[in-house]
Amino acid sequence: MTSDEAWLSRVRRDMRPIYEGVVAALEAAIAEGELQPGDRLPAQRAVAARLGVDLTTVTRAYDLARRRGLLEGAVGRGTFVRQRPEEDEGGLVDLSMNLPPPPDGLSLATLIGETLTGVLARTDAARLMAYHPEFGALGQRRAGAAWLAPCLGERAPEQVLVAPGAQAALAAALSTLCRTGDAVLCEPLTYPGFLSVTAQLGLRAVACPADADGVQAEALKELCARERPVAAYLVPAMQNPTAGTMPEDRRRDVAQVLDLAGVWLIEDDPYSRLLEAPAPAICSHLTSRFVYIATLAKTLSPGLRIAYAVTADAADAERLATALRALALMPPPLMAALATVWMREGRAEALLDAVRREARARRAIAAARLPGARGGAESLHVWLPLPPGASPEHLRTEAQRRGLALVTQDAFAATPAAPPGVRVSLGGPGRRAVLDSALSGLAQALDAPGPRRTVV
Image 1 (cartoon, rainbow, N blue to C red):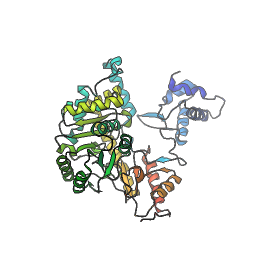
Image 2: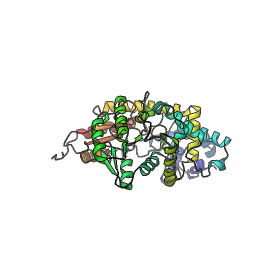
Image 3: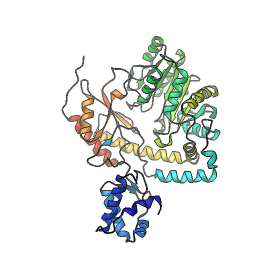
Image 4: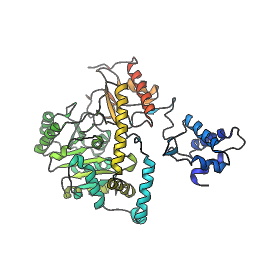
């Protein structure tokens, strides 16, 4: 008996009807961890043959298990243990974790399986799974440069590093450029991972005034003169958490301010490839002093643990690689190989397009349920601003009471004066229907009476 069929030994033949015995075996195997979320179940015909029953019995069992929230799947994909069993009527729907939604019309499991089979067929597995001193072989860096070209234009592979995730690249960049006590400019509401790294390194995160288009160039100029920052950390496309995108003229103005002040730019750009026509990156207007970071976690899959870090020249890339080596030793070779093959064969673009389609559909749901939320058509999250005096914590608690997980502005605040609001992530729920129901519940929570903050 194969590992994916081991749970069938739990089926009690004395239980009638027999299809309920199959469902009971599934429930027990899932409850005890023998079957994990995402595990593929054997085909119905294989189960019928193994149990010695007719196909209709197994079909009824699988259908009942789906109705009970144990299984999920679709024609052409197979049947899987439900990834998010908490998303039933009595569970908690996660609107707090920002991740890409399941790709529309494409099986990620099939794509991974086919690609890895090909990689292992033409690659020495021992070499693939060994330690790799470099941060991306030449072919991997070339593939990364081509992937980023819509945002960066053409880049030499010597400028590109393959990093084990954006967080590692960010920590390496800050530890390379800054020393304890240095100031790093950022948006008033910013990525929590940046705040955690600056705290760990003893850096000062200094918020720059911003509007709907991002940080304001004049305010940035004043802060550069007053604070003498070493670097500025900015997220210009579908900013996390406000979901705003900086227009091209503002990007050019910001680049000019930083260039004249001699301040490094760390541009974190996880979302631009989701845009049909992304604006050129801020660093495309610079010739030196920048680190551009783009992860695949938001555009393809978080499980890849692959990001690209781009610098102005090979010398800066080597400095960054030294810091990355100290922090993380190397990127995951198997995932780097998989991502590279996807890019070379056009599969990454197909997956990106499927994620983009699903993101658009979910953003449309959010527009209908939360008309006051901000975010572009392809955004994986929206920002829900709250009126002055409103209590974000009350909204979070009220949402939790309704089975929804949210995150308030406190997690993103680089300044105590950060505007109140909540980020609503759209990719977490496994199905659009679950998201639609969750956002309807959030709309009701918004209308629920509650305490207001005292503003002084």
